[in-house]
Image 1 (cartoon, one colour):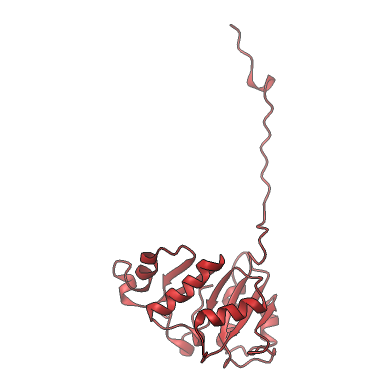
Image 2: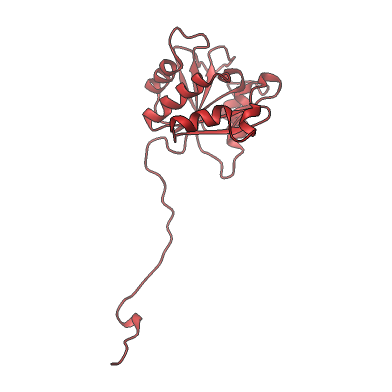
Length: 191
């Protein structure tokens, strides 16, 4: 029986086209700052969220020495460079919970995907607080990005990373960074 060349039967064309995610806010992160962070952009507990498209737009509202500016600079320095950053204000001494604050921010503007905190707004090494932020992200299809400088995180993946793994959350990215909790003297940004 004679064989027929495959190209006489089937014509295969392979092309590669870049597809962009279509979910609202997918390529946008939210930087959570405390209401005590000094800014001239009018962000406060009444006006919870602002949108920034460059480090220059952040510089117009935040001093170059501020933790907000430093985190935004790291964020916009990525390659490829993100096109938008949301900055959201949380009450530094809320009467409610961290989840309540994130709900208020999200109600003001939900067009973002991942969230992280500035050095002055960092949550402590209290595992319950990390789990609360991670649980909030898990229930809203958001991504929580954070870091710790716990020695246990380096010693066999213990500490906060292990606690988050144990509860089975998969919408949280936690990693070790030596300066994660040093505050204003050594700012930290996951971006």
